[in-house]
Length: 358
Image 1 (cartoon, rainbow, N blue to C red):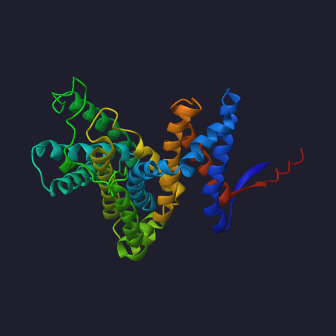
Image 2: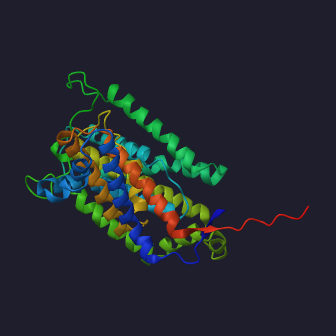
Image 3: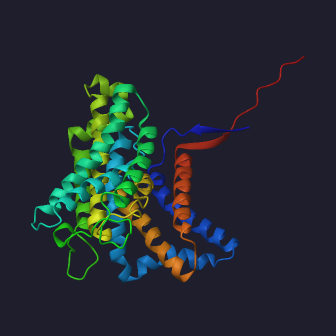
């Protein structure tokens, strides 16, 4: 009889190679699946995973897609290291965009360098405030943050729909459910004239460096790691688990909210019902693909950005359905979790107990 046995010491090499193995298995499985249903499987996988990397005109799209994933995944990784499972980053992303857009609408007829920073600050506060709800329920009532953060996501999305179809609807928008377009003072500038890459992209990389420093070199980062790995040792060392829970959820919500307003002030330029694009959920895959480390998260965000950009290419060249991107992302998560299990556990034969003589 087979049973799972925990390995004494997981291989460090395999721990870092398993994401690459998961990517390879995802590509192979996707090729077989799409080939079986009548598409050119090899061409489909090439369009999704290779074309965005070899066509320089697509690189700007990769940076723009990766930036919000990096920001959100950094916040989630802090929580996951503390054993705080924030699954509602998508809702915090939406609420951050709503809060920042509120500032944009209030200052729509104004100009000044201070408007965009005020929008960014409102986005951070909006996302953090929304994450404070599951934090409060977790600390005071021991309610699972997994359930509360996830359910609040749908509340945020419905609130967005209400605003863009009601009080925030653009009166000059030909009856489309959308806000006014942001002005020049409310839009993220490009890093170079004529470039699609806005300043949110280098800021995301800078935030990754800051997160690495905080988690690796500060007492706050050490407290997060200890509370997540050894709660009893954390209590003995004087670290307050409730305080770490608050910090982890607020950091995750704040970074998700910042990603939200940057997405609204960058690629979208307004709020529409299409604004919730699933970045908050995809960032969970990014965090685990990057092994919860900031440098790894940058790599993971680029991989998932490739699937977004490549999915769009495959729709036009191979005629794949739009759901193909989600399928590849789901396969990647499945194989990542599967390889992680094999890194930490192994299958072994368990002898059957001898039958007693009658």
